[in-house]
Structure formats: structure tokens, C-alpha cells
Image 1 (cartoon, helix red, strand yellow):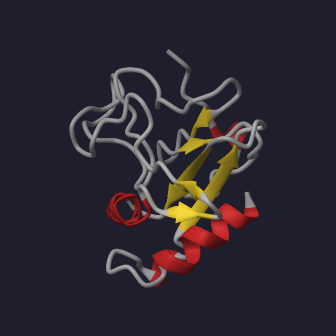
Image 2: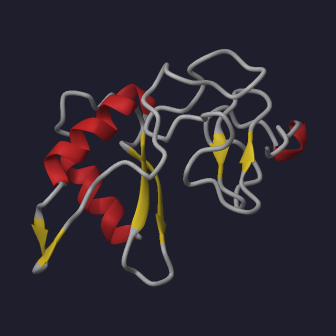
Length: 140
């Protein structure tokens, strides 16, 4: 996961959509145990789009990268979680659409303070730092 993070971060720091005031360009890398794919979370939707254009079909260590949005991805501003304002979601993540993000897994949680999707392993929200116990939105 660290090598993937370094690969993306090095290049993303030079893309026009990168904003140093938002911190690191890559928020999280979740490498599947098989090592055959990973979910990479970027600091913004724009940066994710730029990285997709830059890295898709790039050859790295003799392997061709496939970089795409997760299945079920909904572009920003199109759909919101029922009962919440339209267009909720985090930059660089699949939008929350009529249920939960496509990469939502058992134990993941939605921050009640800022509506951010957080991985199960996190006890505080990586966007607003609210605690997991500050309130979880129920899975649908």
C-alpha cells in the first residue's frame, strides 16, 4: 500500500488540482489482501479525476495499471443519501447514493458530523476528526 501511495502522491503533487492547503494528495490506500487491486482515496474529486487520466493504462514494473472509478460511482452533486441534502459525499470518494458508497464494507461508518465515509479501522473521522461514537448514520 505504501508503494502505491508514493507512486500516486509523487505525481499528484504536480497536478493542477492538487491543493497543498488540503494536505496530502492521497488520503488513504486500501490494498486488497490478494494484492491485485486497491482503492485509492484522493483529497478532491478533481484530483481523483486528474489522477485517473494520468495513470490509467500506465505501465509500472511491467504491469499495465487500470485506474477507474468504483462500480456504482455517482458524480458529485447528483444524488444524496435519503433524508440528507443532495450531493453529499467526500471529494475523491464515490458519492453516497441512495444507500451507501460502492466501496462501503462491513464495519465502515458515516460520520454524523460531516457525512464522511470512514473505514472500519478508523475511530475518528479523517475529515473532521469527530469520534466514531459521535453518532453513526445507520446502514441502509
